[in-house]
Length: 213
Image (cartoon, rainbow, N blue to C red):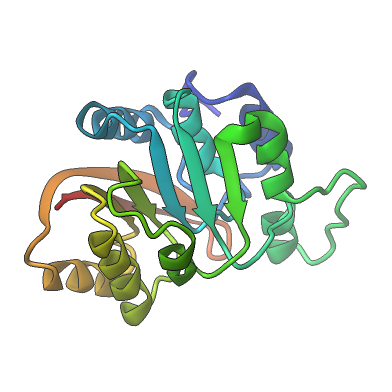
């Protein structure tokens, strides 16, 4: 895969290669544009504590933890996805191998105490981490409905998180309209990337944006 950045952790590099035939839907692509974007976020946020909504298979979390080795990332997702889930979704005849472990287990193995998985809905962050200013930035890629994103952003604002990344604002236009409701947030950066959708064999463009409080 020529587009793969050399900054990706070797475990996740091998995982992408194992999930062959482009069956990589459900996560940010591991290209240099994405890594460059997170690096620019790091320059602004200087992260020690990162909040993530939507873990899926853990690729976005791995990019961030690889770039910010001194940071701890807390990820919320009500489901525990297994590493071969996407292949089975598009190929019903696929039989997962015996090492089909949970993606969150794999991340804990790789990152240890730097990774904290919360198998909960994102709104529960208000109870778990009530201290304002605890997180340096948030990566929001969970509930892609109007109300879901609105709640996630609102909670980030109330927690005093100075920088908020919102993914999929081009592919799912309603998300941009939610962002526009928060007039107290300013867009300071945007990353366009390409992602492959096995369901209809298409290559699509999408955007994630960085908002500042």
